[in-house]
Image (cartoon, rainbow, N blue to C red):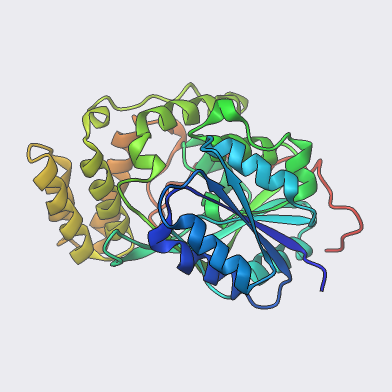
Length: 349
C-alpha cells in the first residue's frame, strides 16, 4: 500500500525512550506510513536503536547528520517526504495506535484545515501521570491560544498537509526555539488549524526540554511571532513578568508540572511538584500558592490557575481575556477564524 503519511522524528541522544517512540509509530492502525528518523549527530545508543528498527521494518528510514540545529533536521525530513501528509513525532513521546488514523480522517472531512493536532496525556520525568493536556478545538479558541502566547497545537502531535507546509516555506531557522509557534502563525494565514478532541498521544515533560532549557529565548521568539496576529486584533505587544525570568531550570520544570496537574484535577501530583520546586528555590511564593490551591474546591483552583497564568504571561491577553471556563482554559472574547485561502485539491467534505 502506498504511504499516505510521512512521520518525521528528529532525535539527538534520545536512547532512553527512542524504542518506545518508534514502536508507537509503527503500531499505528488504519494508515499507511513511512517513518524518517533524523539522527542529529547522536553520541549515545541512538544510532544502534534506529538501525535495529530499520532492519526489522522497511518503513523506517534513517538520516544521519553531523549535529545541526533542530530546524535544519526538520526541514531535511520535510524535503524527503513524498506523501500528501506529514506528521511530527518526538523521541521521548509516544503515539497511541489510532492517533494518525483519527487525524487523517479529520483532515479528509475538513478540506479547509491545513494542520491538525490532538489532546495528550502528560507524564513527568518519573512516568507519573500529570493529566490530560486539552487543546483548543478550532476557530476562535485557536486564535485565543496564539494571541495568549500558547501553541494552538502540541508540536509533536502535528499532522500537516505537505502542500501547505511547502507553500509557506517550511520551518524558519530564525524563529528557533519558537519554530512551532512561527509555523502555526504562517499556516493559519492559508487555512484552518484544529485539534482532534481525544487524547491520542503521551507527552513526557522533563527538565532537558527546549521549553525549559531555552525558555527565555523561546518566549522572546514567541512574542515576535505573534505580534502580527495581536496587531490584527488591535492588541498591544505582549508583556512578560520579570519575576519568572529569575526561575532556575528545575523550578521551571516543576512549576509547569504542578500547574498542569492542578488544572487537570490531580492535586496530589500538583503538591508533589510544588514541593519539588521549593527544594530548588525555597523563597518562591508560587509553589506555596499552588499547594494551598490543591486543597481548595475545584472552582477556586481554576481561578488560581488562571491568575497564575496571567502573572506568568505578564497579562499578555490584557483586557481581551475573560475568566477561565470550566476546562480551565483562558478564552478570548473577540475571536475569528482564519481566511480559507487554502483548499486541498480534489478533496471532499
